[in-house]
Image 1 (cartoon, one colour):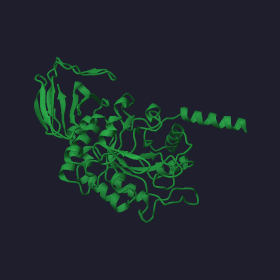
Image 2 (image 1 turned 180 degrees about the vertical axis):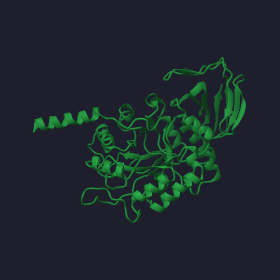
Image 3 (image 1 turned 90 degrees about the vertical axis):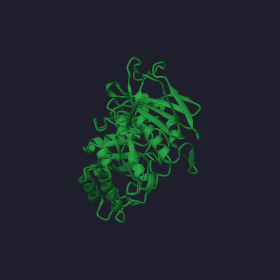
Image 4 (image 1 turned 45 degrees about the horizontal axis):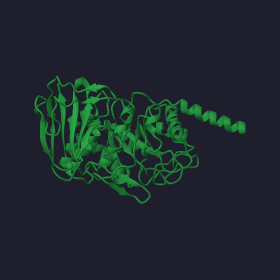
Length: 400
């Protein structure tokens, strides 16, 4: 028995060491829409097809949102007699493959959800013990993206569980983005790069700006609380391996200024941009935020550098992000509940990215392009001064 256990342990360790995800699927942070934030398990094929339609008609697809991800609750409460997951016939009367084909026909990619535990977070069948079988089914359904959660995992080793599923996807043969949704509990940034294309870094987000939301046994985090936890992780992120601070809450109840700030921060952090609102009902302002091409270009910058918090004093934060061709992004953020004055002398204030070794060149006169107004607003020849409204931002692309 002892030899058998040693052999099983050696096999498990070899499996971990052999992790090899599909490379090149996420050279920039993935973008798309996910059903969970607004709908939880109240999903069905009509709604998903409508979302695919609106992703195209609203201009979101053209802006880069190309993954439609179906979250928890898509399957029946039991596997079939062969151990296969079964799409809920009440929610998906024409079968899941028909929905996938519809989404693909729109020029979009289809993502879905399961969990590393024995049950999903909503108590549907998890994948533990069925990794290779489920991966084969996902490949047969032409799935492009798998979000893999971490509920009901008592006694399970996270690195082993995610590596096993990553290898199962590889064995199934269809390239899929693998989203490690482990909430940062076991520091996936330290081992996730060969396993998946992105990994969650915190507990779930909630549509509040700067507090927590209690779910009884755990707390969901606000936009700013999540941002607070990211800066020390930036060295782990880059093309094809991204820190994921969770989905977007833009359009889900915060103020216009707070939604702008949320979207700005996620772009500065090179975060995956997964919309979580009901895009069929979004306001003109929400659509303008989500499809702002200048903000998205900062998020999707090919250098793939996660930005950093340069300073944080009296609730006034300054973030910087190096971009390709020597450009920079800068975000002045007022976290407080009252107006805040900001002043920044470009020529006398050194800005150095000590992790990725970029320095803002004080000898260059950059043009200040305001990515929210779409206008040039001076240069770095003169110091910048402004008054920023509560929970709002001023954000520039510094162009040479």
